[in-house]
Image (cartoon, rainbow, N blue to C red):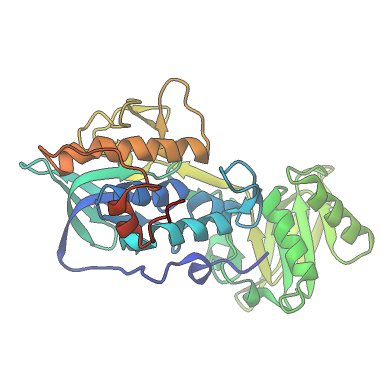
Length: 368
């Protein structure tokens, strides 16, 4: 698994603007595939956007959860990974010069007397925008923690819920807790990687079956049989420390047998828990932690605030990236009358429109 982080998917034009009030036509909340495609659809209508995301890099859920897993249902791409899809979308929106504001969440939205929205982020970045597009997936992701009193003091030094820099763990005794794709993928990575190989890898899961790709499970079992890594059925119930450093974890098996496992690094993959966060306080109609929208323009109950992708719900909703892309197009056209009042915004085709060719920086097709 290649190293994750901003350098892997960050567009060169990304910049963070702070201090002053930024006036704009559109703010997109969420830099996942749907949020990125929303930038594209807005750009086709000559609407420039600022994008806000809590993660330190673009890509959203596909990059955070399965950056190297294949995706097969993107039109025109028989197969691509979450990382590759993000890179292609960043390249596609490059002509529209979107500004990205990463590692910050929207903490306040207030509608002004002129119907524009005053948006404030956790870093104090402020916007005055005519429209907001919420493309926050299922909300801000928070890792499900390993609940063990006192263990939290090792957060981000020896206890990790994400792997941002795998090189940090080379030559270490790595203990991985979990039974899904992330846990098994990283176990394989630290056993097999030439330069980031761990001194030892121990995988711990509460049962001897996994929720991961069959091919990955087969590889893990083969490595365990050859003694290249270890697997224990049980749960982490205690830990030991030496000189204020985590030195071992106690694993209790289903039959209450306890075993001490040496550990320099503890990686926990219990999945990510979505939460709406401050979005829940913006006066939007919510059903089961999702935003209710119409299917004409994907507007919420507050005019000027749109919701696209997994964050929204409506009759017949399907949580597919493909569906989110469709929603982005209609949301952009729904926003156009707010941004350009009195202007007749016509549908134009990227194949034939000279204006769109100029906006995209491409040459018009040659006549047959």
